[in-house]
Length: 195
Ligand code: CUA
Image (cartoon, rainbow, N blue to C red; front, side, top):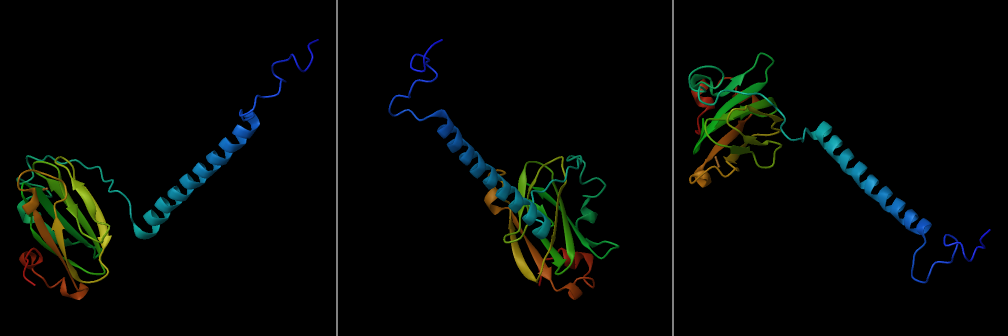
């Protein structure tokens, strides 16, 4: 039987070499730190998603981009804001090089608002600064974003996906009016930039 000195597994480690169990303890500490960071980030995503409705738009709904103007939801007569039977508001907008149609939208404050958008040509972006409204508008798909505006105000609405040579000039305006002022507005007033 070999002595402890000759057994290579039991020989003392040369200076400067860290023993395996010490390395493994350090690795476990780092794994614990990484897992707790991961858990904290997941918790932030879940909490902001549930309490503030902050999450990536995930509506997967297709539409034929070459027939938008002919009939259906995105025909010209159906664009703009409409009041639903439950009192919420739906705004339908078409994005194309280089405009939003309609380019002025009025919506009421303190009311659930659903934006439904699609594109006739290339990818555009729809962003209302300082709100949770921020989505890509992809031809062939309907982008849907829901929000509630706490108070009246005016939002300039730049296209924020580069879409061609006129991208920098592609913008529109969303005006949030006091809740009680919205229902009496006629359809053409709801898509007007006039105050
Ligand atoms: Cu449309 Cu940039």
